[in-house]
Image (cartoon, rainbow, N blue to C red; front, side, top):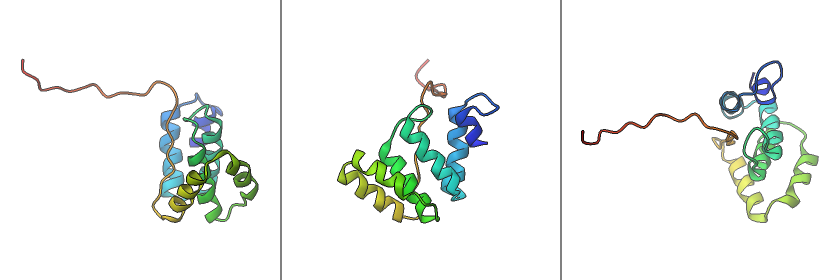
Length: 118
């Protein structure tokens, strides 16, 4: 469902719901396909804010789960600084590390609540 909401496959694109479902699928369920889709979307930057370091991290997490992403990692490496690669590798080894997805476009905001003097 996160894939459908992110790409508009049969439904209207909804980045906020896609973020929630892809985040749960990748970060909680450790779903390889969710990591791969997150990496793809983070590289493109059309649904979620473009973040090559987070895309690299998502690929490393997918690789740890058995996905063959060597070519994709090699493609991204020259686009990142050495520090960004080192940080992503460190976070990939840290078990509860999370891939961050930030939707592009208007965010749903909560109304402010103020208890100021009347």
